[in-house]
Amino acid sequence: MFKNRVFPIIIVLVLVLISCGSKSKEDSARNTEIEKQVEEDDSTKSDSKIIVGANRTYLYLPLLSGKRIGIVANQTSVIFTDNTENGMTNYTHLVDSLVSLNININKVFAPEHGFRGKADAGELVKDGTDTKTGLPIVSLYGKNKKPSSEQLADLDMVIFDIQDVGARFYTYISSLHYVMEACAEAKIPVLILDRPNPNGRYIDGPILEPEYKSFVGMHPIPVVHGMTIGEYAKMINGENWLANQIKCDLTVIEMQNYSHNNFYSLPIKPSPNLPNDQAINLYPSLCFFEGTNVNAGRGTSKQFQIYGSPYLDKTVYTFKYIPSPNEGSKYPKHDGTLCYGEDLSEHATMTTLDLSYVIRAYENSIDKKVFFTDFFTTLAGTKTLQKQIESGVSESDIRQSWAEGLETFQKTRKAYLIYN
Image (tube, rainbow, N blue to C red; front, side, top):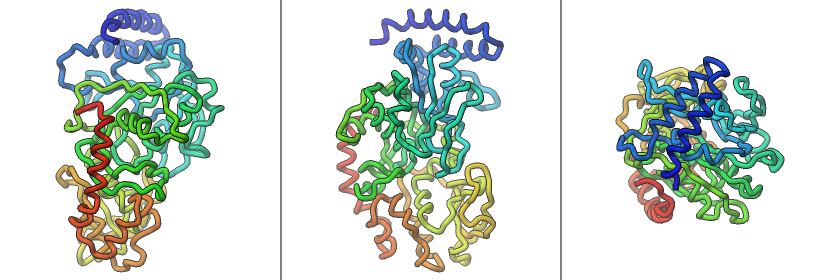
């Protein structure tokens, strides 16, 4: 429906950009990059490069015209450019770009880790003001995780644009749920700018049981769900997961040239403790250590690429390190204490959830009674996994116990897929 409108829209955008260009040299340079991207990002191109939803500006800018906009965003909410410098992809932040185009942005909603992505995992994010744009920032990881009716009262539309990593316990999809629910109740449409799932090539793990619902797991899905944010939003709507089975008025700006089989390297780290592709790939498997007395690399430069604990048998584990406070982990587990464990930073890319690390760590713990914490069940979404590990059930048998649930989920998921 948009194809016949592409060229008129481009002409209008060019005129808008020219008029905005006189503000300052910085604004002019930014607008030139956005203009260039609009001209090059044509749906008729036969380029194989993945084009994220935010870059397909000609599809969504007309939807924003004359509306008061709220944006759920963080440091990953960017419009990429084709130029590279020192091997890094250049980009402009979505909020900065839309403000420079005179789109009426009223406020920014910040998820876990904050708008600029600096807060620790689990650290409360405060309301505030963005120093660059002057926009009010409303926290979705503070006193409320769901936008209030008052916070939405001056908005006509909410944009959701955040890079996810495809794991159930990564809280951005929980924020997505609450944003959709609040907007549905307020009869405000939600526009999702879709992005790749770096762990989108597989589906794995136990299905969450309803009694263990939490902010690190809200829906009956496996640990690794294999869906993009846009696909997941469609599932939230379609499976009636919002309160009172209410439906959100949802529009997804799809990616171009994306497949779930694509390898996608994230140019911006999605949170402080996922610094690179290796950490993102290992995260679904190593995050289980967050519910044990084992440190998963927080307080080091290899977050979610190493693990260790003073409670692991040092005759079995020869790798050792000492966690200390750093960005994203002000109070790391076992701060200042020598930990014995394993370095997986050179491990081959995985396409399954690997339980061998947590099973081996439990078997070689010098005090098994203090190995697990209550948070392990919250992460697993079931009590069964801890019981299986404690009882010595093999990894293959544990995986077999997931088979029926995963098969059912696969069938359900299929109805909401946008990409192959």
